[in-house]
Length: 144
Image (cartoon, rainbow, N blue to C red; front, side, top):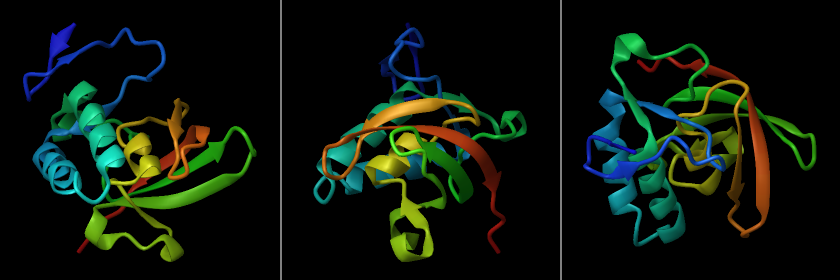
């Protein structure tokens, strides 16, 4: 067990969850999103807080290729249906499902955060159905 920046105990030995990493510059923003979203999306907010708490915190020069970060284009395959999708992971105010921009404060968005290409994770979607996804590509998008 180790302790993260927020003093939470985390274990990298949990076989059900893949190891994840989050950029240090995004931690406070993500925590604020989770805090403010607890009234609107309590389950997604709690899940996002858990993900932040267990993530390895990376300094920008250490950010790895293929890591799912905020403002990133992510492709993934749904194992149950073999459907492949590509979305942009964004903060809630920029979310637009019709345009393929999903909020980090959604079950899918929180599940993708910090994943790397090739990793799989199981999560409960908005309807409570269990889904398993595998990340197939992650490309950071430049925002002007």
